[in-house]
Length: 240
Image (cartoon, rainbow, N blue to C red):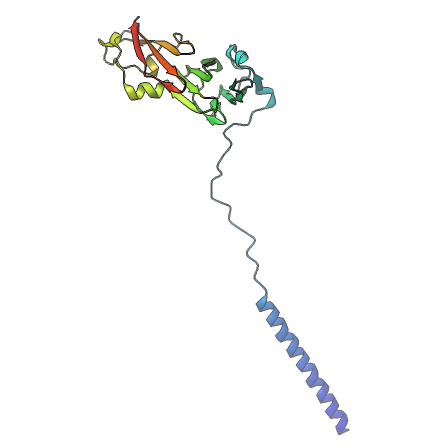
């Protein structure tokens, strides 16, 4: 009998040891298991940056035009939103200059002229206020938006070579036709938008302004000569 009792006690002891080992092993495993991060995260407060320079425009309002077709536009082809005009055939020296005009008749912050995906102007009153020409292996852009007149010139590599508005702002040229007025300085706002003439060596323009009686006063004629990539300062020609 005593032998059997010893066997029973031994069995219980072994079972207790096994239970203790199982508990100890479980604790070791739980302590070494990496804790999961809380899956509930706060919404990101970082603002999303819109890196696309172009607005989303439907296929119905996207047009592929030649330079002549664009210059012949009498108004936008779509209303109540954006419209896009890709000028497809501007090639100079065997290189294509990618040009796009974006217009909207509603509030929109992506309207303007784009050259090689870079926005060159930020105002677009009407598609008819942008005209293109190629002279002396360069792309000339006449921009008459925002009641201003400006000329931008690009090389065959799509690099901006000249900006008439910036030039006038830096030079502060005094027009002798306006000496009796409060402000006789020429600016992009005192150029007759219909007066530009372009050739392979120069372009000319005429100035005009409005007096205190709202009468248009004719100014003077100026010319800008250029040779290759060098543009000279506007030069007085004569009084109109």
